Image (tube, rainbow, N blue to C red):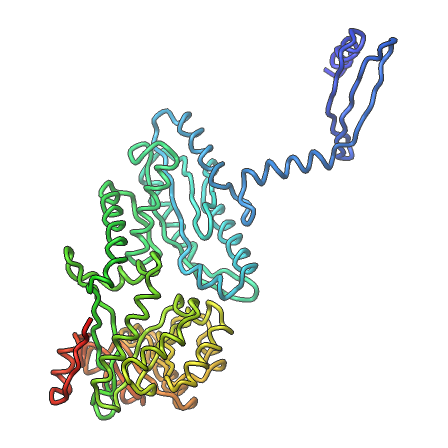
Length: 491
């Protein structure tokens, strides 16, 4: 009632009370009106335009509750919302879903920081389109999002939402003229059975997410109680891996690379193995990413270089040793020195050493990486692009640096029987290799039929289980050159 409001304010002024009111004017301005009684009677009225101050306060409040990149809720506000919902849910179930963007790091390196932020905004918008009214989308940081699903028909509704998110996120994102397909993995925790505290629910959903990513990405998993035990085992494995090198638990196996025409061995790829004292052989797919996470991949990579060069010095001079080099080794700034040291210690001819890099390595810092590659090439070392055909812009890198070899990713060889275009890709890569004058190697050859196709397409080399699995150094020596003496490492 405007009249009652005016009368109440006038009465307060008559009583000598000081008043301050905030009013929003029809034009959108916000003013503060203050009435102050004067000592000798009467009163003084002042007004201030506080539009900018109020907008600033609103912005501060907004950014305190929202992620600055995507505009969705930040973690603190999300946890507050979960607490609020839990108090009103009356024991009903609800779900917390952790969502991680697959391969975001690679896309971010391709797009740059600003482009990566635009991709994150597009992902957040698509996630918000996936959820129902009352649900909350939040960004935890980096490429990690979390969703509060308030529907109480759980776990059915969480399963439906997770499946839908995985499906929808497979659709390409258009960012800065690039069409990017990233996909997501999802982990799910159900309250109250998997926890009631926001932090606990997020932790449990994240544990399920990690398992989903290890199982192939682009899928979802529900939290299970035994995941806690698995995580503790993983923590122990991290600690064990830090000591594995000094304890002599790491070993190199060697997979022969075969000349496609003569079917004779032309070299080997060095592949790392870890024989855990308690758990036995640990899969490289598990411990190599772990080595990157815990920060031991650089010293391990240097050990691989030294050991591979030392072993290859026992081989005939026409054979080459291929060693995979990680992005972390390039970032360390010590790769060239490590190669020089390994060659000097072993006496291996640089032409016998071949360093394999993936496109992911080039995306880290393209110009710096290319400079390092040129220095390595000047030493006489050969450079191969590994997993060719699986990245964003492999062809552009072939223009940037004169690679000595292209290694076709084994997935194309595996898909030959499916007739889904792999034959055309295999033929195109072979033709590209001939045009560039570089060696072409097909990985993953497991059958005679695959080998015959690869050879007929003109590939220089093949590698795969059809010829040999990766084997220990002494077994390789016995298989291919038993008459040659073999120096055994002292360490």
